[in-house]
Length: 133
Image (tube, rainbow, N blue to C red; front, side, top):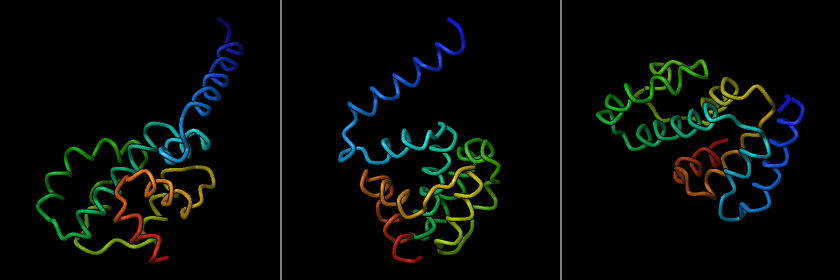
C-alpha cells in the first residue's frame, strides 16, 4: 500500500474512532484524538499529574519511588525528572511550563485540564490547577 493510501486509511480510522468514543464518558481521549496527541505526550501529561498529586499530598517517599519509573516517559518529551520532583506545591504556571515542552501546538491549558478532570484522571490535581490560574 502506498503512503498516500495509508494516510487516507488512518484518517478514516481516526474518524471512526471519534464516532464510537463517547465524548461525555471519555473527554480526554476525544481531546487527544482531536489534537493528534502522540502516546509520549499523553504519557508525559498523565505522569506529571501523578507527580503533582504526590506533591500536593506531601508524599515525598512516593516521589523517590516514582523517579525511576517516570524517567523515560518524561525524557521522551525533553523534561528531566529532577525538574518535576520538587518538595513544593505545584502551580498552574509550572504546569503551563511543562505543557509547552510536551506539545508543540497551541493546546489550551484550561480545556486540557477540564478534559482530564472530567475523565477522572487526577481530578483533584486538575481542579487545584484550574482554580489556581
